[in-house]
Image 1 (cartoon, one colour):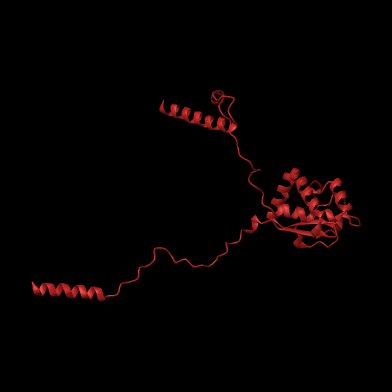
Image 2 (cartoon, one colour):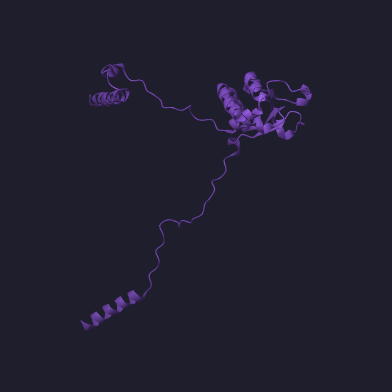
Length: 208
């Protein structure tokens, strides 16, 4: 009996003296280091350049498109080396003259021109898609490209197109459910009751 107690005491002492292994974390340690996300693929980024029509054409220009409503003075078609003349996405004559009368109207001009471009969504989308496939150079006779319609157009083309125009979708309510809602209720209450009627009808159909 005494020998058994001495043996157990020796084993317990040996276990306590053995250092414990540190537990390995179940997940890798977290380092306070910012890792930049990988850049998007080049095909998702439109390649757009702005250039004066009077500058010589270069192979790096890619698809050369004139974005002036009027043909530039002193330039013939051969030296222009154009692939397209996109007059439909240029500022209207009225807006162009209004801005040229006072160059300090640049912020207002940019906002108004953006509103005009909203009516040319199809042409903008086509040019944006072309810029994803190959470089596109916007050509203009403007002296200051950074304070001209070219800069506004370039920003619009470089902005990804939104998946939808915004707002919330509305679903048509069955005629029977709509007729069962009192007309005197508010629109929010009518919508809530309409949803309740739909759920009740679905439960009856499932139980039957």
